[in-house]
Structure formats: C-alpha cells, structure tokens
Amino acid sequence: MTDTKRIDELEIRSAHQDQMLGELNDVIAAQWKKIEQLEFLLKRTREELQNINLRPEGEEAPPPHY
Image (cartoon, rainbow, N blue to C red):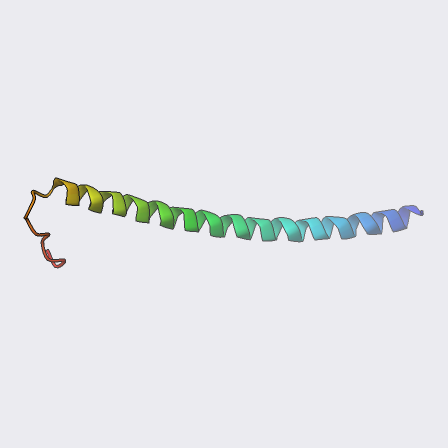
C-alpha cells in the first residue's frame, strides 16, 4: 500500500470519526436536556406529594389560581 493511499484512508476514517463524534455529541446534549426536564418534573411531583401529605385531613386543596 502506498503512502498516499494510506493517508487517504486515514483522512477518510478521520472524517467519519469526526461525523460520528458530532452525532454522539448531539445525542448526549438531547439526553441531558431530557434528564433536566425529568429532574424538574420529579422535583415538582415530590413537592406536590409533600403538600398533599401536609394538608390536614378533610381540608381541600386551594384552587389552582392561588
């Protein structure tokens, strides 16, 4: 195999790896965004459950506009 052909193959491989790294970065960024959304929802759900548990029996929840 000639040096030119080896260099061409290495450049092609490098270009494919650069593309794959970009795609993996996009996937990781999307997953991170989803994790942040889920953490927010989990926190809100915990707060709502805690408010339900703190409310005396028989007392109704305040209307949503409060």
